[in-house]
Every structure is written in C-alpha cells, then in structure tokens.
Image 1 (cartoon, helix red, strand yellow):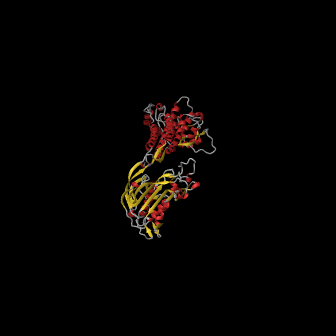
Image 2 (cartoon, one colour; image 1 turned 90 degrees about the vertical axis):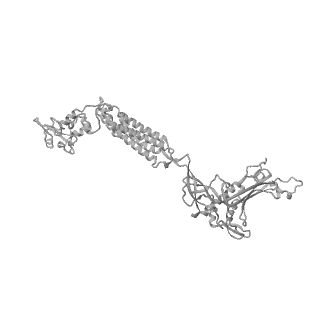
Image 3 (cartoon, helix red, strand yellow; image 1 turned 30 degrees about the vertical axis):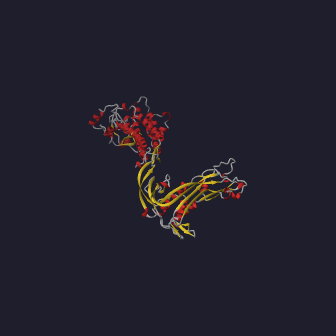
Length: 584
C-alpha cells in the first residue's frame, strides 16, 4: 500500500538525481560572507567618521558624529551576529562529517553557537564556535567606546569672518547730563541720578553689556562713532633738591628741604567752569637720588567726535580694544559743549570731571625732618600705586619711606586710558534705550569654534574587539567547500540527516527548500504514540497476523501487547501525553 504522503513519482525522480556538489564557488556562503563584509565596512565607517570629524567645527556636522558612530557600530554588530549564525551552520555540518564525531560533540557545537552561557562555561570543551560566540557577544562593547572616542572641545585655529553689528553709542553729551555744580566756587559736587550708575560701574570695573542681543558669535572688532576725547600733551622738567643743607652755621628755618620739601608725585584732573576745558597735570620723581629733575606733564582734554576701536564678545559685552590707546581714536571733529555758566545747577561735563578727580587726584609730599629722616605725606591712592618702594641708594638700608630714595613710575598712559574709558561708558549710557542712536557698523569676527576631537585609544580598543570577533567568525566558515549542498540548522534538515521515518520518502541530499517542497505540507504532531511490540515501521502498525495498516488513533489505542513512546509522528496517530504516563 502506498504511503499516504509520498511525493509524486515525477518529483521523486528529480530529487533522486540531486548530486553531492562540493566546491569553492558552488558552496560559497554568500550571505555569511556578505554579513562579514558588512561588519568590516561598519567598522571602517566608524574609523572614517572619527578621522573625518577630528578637528572639524561642530557646525559642519548637521548630525553629530556620535550618532553616525552609533549607527555604524550597531549595523556592524547586527551583521556580525548574522555571520556567526551562518558560520555556526557550516561548522556544525563540518563537525558532523568528521570521523569519530560523538553526538555530544554535535550538541555542544550547536549549543555554543546559540547560548553565550553555554559557550562561556564550555571548560575543556571550548572550541572555535565557543570563542567566536563569546567575542561576538562582547563586540557591542565597541559602541560606548566609539561614543567616548568623539568629544567636543575648543578648537586651536581662529576663524576670521565679516560681521554686521548694531551698537548704541551717543555722539554728543546732552546739556546737564553728568552732574551738578554748587557754591561760590561753582565746584562740581554731585552726579545726576542717571550718571551715578555709570560712575559706580566704572569704579567697580563692571563689564558693559549691550542692551540687545548682538550678532557676534565670538570676538568681534569694529569701529563706532561716539563722543570721546581729543588729547594733547606736553612735557618738561623741573629741578628739585631734597638734600639737607650743609651750610654752617646750620639754620633749619633756612633749609628748603625742611621748610618747603617737594611734591615728588602729583596727579591732578582740573576743570574750569567758564571755559569747559579739562586738563590732566602730572608731576613725579622718576629717579631715586635726592637731587635731580622732576618730570612735569600737562595734557589738555577736549570733547570730540571720535571713531572708537571696540571689541564685542559672544556674551554681548562691549569694551574698548585693550590693545589701543586714546591717541588711536580717529578724531572726526572737536565738540564745543554748551558752557556751564557761573551759576549753580546741572553741568554737562562737571560730573565726568568729578568722577576722575575723586578717583585719581593724588599727591605725595617729601621733606627732610631732621633726626627722624625724611617725612612722606600722601593724599589719594594714585601716588602710592605708582611708588617704587624697592628703589633706594642708602647703604644703611634706611626704610624707603624715611629716605629720599623714593621714585615713581609714569602714570600718564594709565590715567588717560581711564579718562577715555569713562568717556566711552558715558557715550554708551547716554545711548542706552535710545533706538535712534543705534549704529550699524561692519566689523571682523574672530571665532575659535568648538570642534570635534577624536581619541584614537578608544577607537583602537573598539577595532581590536570587533576585529577579533570578525576573525574568529570568519574561521567558522573554514572547510565550507567540502559540503555538497547548502546547509542549515532547520529541524527538517537535521531530522533527515538522522533518517527520521517521517522524512524517509525525501532525498537524503535535499536542502531545506527541497524538503519543504517534498514534505512541508505534511501534518505532524508531537505526543504519545502506541507502538506494536513486535514490529514498527513508524507510519504503520503490523498486527499479530502479519497484516499492516496505517496507524490511526483507534489502532494506536487498541494494539495488543503494544507500548507507548513520545515522538513526532503523523497527527492521526498521536495522542496528548497524560500525567503520570511513562514512555519507552
């Protein structure tokens, strides 16, 4: 009687002719090798991303390199796992074809390729598949390493580019803006409420911020027109003598060094109400001897419309270019302010003068005081700031403050810079909040952009991990050319290799696709099957009288002298196992 699910004779004829076809090309595992190549390309892409992004500004990468690294690393690991599964198939069948192969060897080979735990606990049974499985499982460690390999840091190269800036700067001082004058001498005595804030910020050396967001992204340099100073200075020397008189008989009342002494330092900002002129008068002793010449310098300061060199940074702070002086401000024309007539009330320039006077007017007076040596009296802080206290020619090491060996450095540049700074702050404060005073100027922007920095140590570790995994997975394909057909770990193909009765009708050299066509539609079930004690063909039951019939549920349960076992069989002869049943 014909088997109920045997393939057609025509199909069997084709299957019977399926030859064993080994060979380098015929059996080339295209999918496995393509996956290996993809894994290597993913690793190469990671290297390329880190090399290409190193030192490049972050603005050049719309998508961060770390995102691309994550994509490349993930794709590489996915393809590596796929390649391992293909290589494990080849390795299992190659193992099965070796002489003296035990069933335990086949189980371990399969288990190592499917279970990291089994591969990690292989012990003395560790083999190529176990190592490849462990390394493939470790390969994803490369992902955080590659993420760590790319960081953002400050670049080393400065980028120069043009920029357009909007800066509010006043080109004149409003009448009565800075302070008040009072008394018979018409002296500047108070600041206006608006100017008080400006002076306080100046005294505290606070940064000045623009009232709006600027377009500067780094450090920007430009020139702006504003009210400033036209400065003209002249210098000469004046002799002094602080040595006590040697005339005999000595009369202290006739000794100039005792009676008069000398102003060895003097800084004086002066302002005349009627004319509106300001001046800076300086006098200082620049050498340590007790006799010599004082340096005397007089500078006139007049308001003018000037071109200021300014610096604006990315935090919207504005300041004068620190590398420039008042003499580098380009003067457009001088400004004759409305005079503060000899009467009490608001003053246009008096508050500005008062701020400089209070901070910088200073004096140091030195005279011979007899037995106690020299007496130094100072007012204001400027004199002490510019005193050279380590300069003395006294061999007796007398304290400098009690000798005439005191000298001073030139304060001219610093005091003019301070006057310039306050005038610039004044121009900014006047224009603050006044949109009509905003100037649009062209400038130069200097940026040191944040760049990506690659750390190749982390890349090297990631390459080694992935490279080792790729190498061992590649070795699992060794010997593929000895196989005679495409192989897989399909249960159908494995069952056919073990000559399962259900698949006896198919060709023993069938690949999984052929097996699917031959027996794929056959209904099977796993469960309890009653088997005759005297004979068993798998799909048939042989009775005591020697007759055979297809095994069915009814025959399976009524065979005399039979026993039961668990197996995969035709659905018709399988019953659900019952609790407590034993099987052969």
